[in-house]
Length: 454
Ligand code: F6P
Image (cartoon, rainbow, N blue to C red):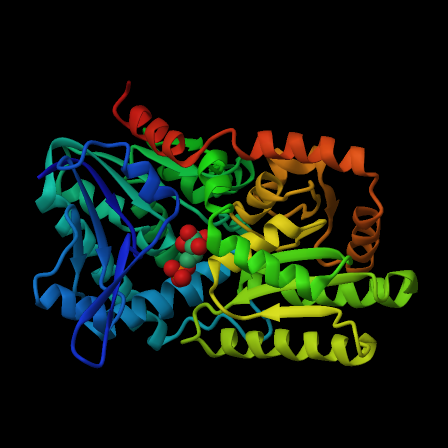
C-alpha cells in the first residue's frame, strides 16, 4: 500500500527478452523518475503497462522493481488502446495532425478500439484502487489514461486524484470531431480528478474553453506546471566520458563549421521535414553558407508500429539525402542525420550547437528547447516555433517562427547564425535560467503539495 501513486503508460523500466531467455532491464530517465525519487521509498507505487513481450515475461516471472506494478493487459486490448486510440486518435487530435479529407473516420472499428481503451484505463484504475492507502494522492499521466480519474473516483472516493497532460490540449472546435458521447466520456474522465494540470496556459485555456468542460467541471481545479530541466544534473550528464568521446567524433566531422542542431523523436508534430526545407532554402538564398555550416539532425525512431510514422521517417531520410545530393561537395556534407537513439550523441550535439532548431507544429512543452541552452558549450541561438509550449517561457530570448513558414524559418536560421557572440551569450544565459525555473522534482512535489492541500 502507498500514500503516493503515479500511473503512466510507460513505466520507469522496460525489459527485453534475450535469445538465451534472460531479461534485460532498461531504465528510463525523465521528470517522473526524478520527481518520484523525492518521495521516501516504500511509500510510493508506480503503476505502468507491460509494453511488450519482455515486460509481459517479467510480470509472469514475478520480476519487478521495488515500487513498480506492471500491468499485463491483453495484447490485443493494449494494441487497440495504445496504438489505435492514444497514438492514432488522441495524439492526432491534441496536435491537430489529421489529414482532414481522409481522417478521422469514426466507425465500428473505432468503437471496438474505444472499448479497449476504456478497459485498459479500467485496469489502471483497479490496480491503483488496490494499492492506495486511505486518502492517498494519485498522479495520473497523460492522454493514454484520460478516463482513469473518473473510473478511480467511482472505486475510491477518498483519494486525492491529479491528472497531468504532457501534450497540448486540442482546440475545442477540433476536439468536437469526436463522436459526442466519446467526447463527453473523455471530459468526464478527466474531470474525475481534483486537479487537472497542463504545461502551459495555452493548453489549460484550450481545455477550459470547451463548452462540455464548462458544463461538467464542478470542483476540479485547472493548473499549469511548466516542466523545466535540472541544470546541474543535465550538465553533469553532458560531461561524462562517453559524451566527450562522441563530441570529439562530431568535431572531427564538422571541423570549424557552424552547427544547426535538432534532436527529436521522428514524430509528425516535430515538423522535421519543414526544418530541412528551411535549411535547403537557407543554402539556396544565402549561398555564403555553403560549406560553412552543418545541420546535425537526430531523429530517433518512434512509434514505428504505425505506418504513417514509418513513412514519415522514410521521408525525413530521403529529404536529407536530397539536400546532401544538391549541395554536398567532396569535403562537405550539409546534413548529418542520425536515426539512432543515442543519448550521449545527442548531448554531444547539444554542446556543439551554435543554433538550436525547435520548430514543432504543436508541442506540449518541448524539453529540447530548454536543454540545449543549458548544455551548449559556447551558447546557442534558439530558433523556436510559436506553437511549442516552451514558447511561453522562452520567446523573449529566442528567434520565434511560424512553423509552417519555411521562408521565415530560413531567415531565422540566418539571423541565428550571424548573431553577435555577446548577444548570443546573454540570451543563452537568460534562456538557461528560464529553462531551469521548475526542475522535475519541484514540478512533481508542487503538484503533490497542491493535491494534498498543503
Ligand atoms: O509528450 C507526451 C509523451 O508521453 C512524452 O512524455 C513522451 O516523450 C512521448 O509522448 C512518448 O511517447 P511513447 O511512450 O509513445 O514513445
